[in-house]
Length: 103
Image (cartoon, rainbow, N blue to C red):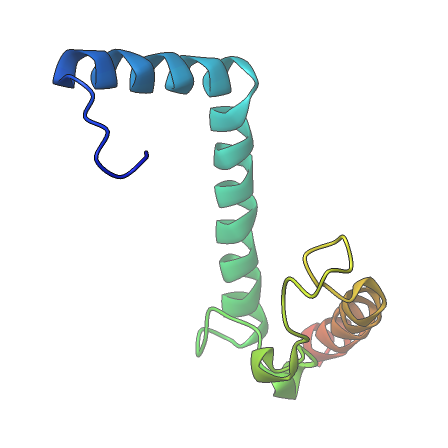
């Protein structure tokens, strides 16, 4: 909101509710639930791969170190994500995970 602009409490609550209902109608809640489910499945995957030691991927399992990731928002139109970097690291991670699981 603009600095100094005061909205009556009831009006603010109604605006918030209308926005919430609109984004729910567009599938926001379903999308959020789906993303969280996939996020939790990823933790379960890494817990299995690391035999319960960690619930996340690490460089020793082929996951690039997050500190080496390119910066976000550099004007590339995709929030700075280097898609080729992600695709290459994903393929490498799947390959290394398969090797670990077959040991």
